[in-house]
Image (cartoon, rainbow, N blue to C red; front, side, top):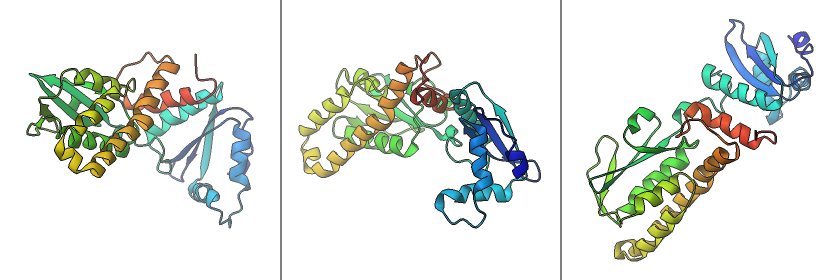
Length: 261
C-alpha cells in the first residue's frame, strides 16, 4: 500500500483508508495530499511517539487507500466533515457524533415560560429553538444551571415530558432569553443576577449561585456567541436553528481564512 500512497497528487483533497473487507476505517483531508500521505509512509513501525499512534493503527489495519481532489482546502475540509458525519468511520472521532448536538427550546404558554433541551429537533415542535450547539456538556450544564436559578425567581411547574415550566417570570424576560440563546445579548444574564440579589434564599447560597451564573456565562462564550458570529460572518442563509449536520461545515467556513463569500 505504501507504493499506492506515493502516487497521491500534490493537490488539496480527501483520502480514505479501508480494511481488508473494504470497510471504511478513516477519512482525512489535506491541503496537499502528496505531502500528507507521505507522513503515513514515513512513520517508523516501532515509533512510540504519541502523535504517531493513530497513524500506526491506521496503517496496521488498512489494506487500501483512495482519494479525491478538491478545488481548495476549504472544500476538502467540508467534504471530510460530511463524509465523517454520514459514514461514521470507526477511527474518526471529531464530528462523528453530530446527531448528539443539542438544541435549547423555549416557549410561553398562558404566562408560563417553558424550557426544553433535546438533540432531537422533533421534540421541540412548538418551541422557539436555538442551536445546534456542539458541546452537550457545556450546553447541558448551562441549561440545568438556568433551571436551578429560575427557582429563586419564579415558581416551578411540574416537569412534563422533558419540559420545565415557570410561573411569575418577570415580564420581558422571554425576549431577553431569546437574545441570550441566540448569542446576541447577555442582558438576560445581567437581569437574572440582579434579581437573585433580591432573593434571601439565593443570597444564602451565594457560592452555589455564583457557580451557576459562571456556567451560563461559559455557555454564552463557548457556544452561543461563536454560533451567532459564524452565522453572521459567513452570511449563512440556511435554516435556523442550524441543522446538526450543517453546524460543523458552517464553522469550517467561518474559521478558514477564505471562508467568507
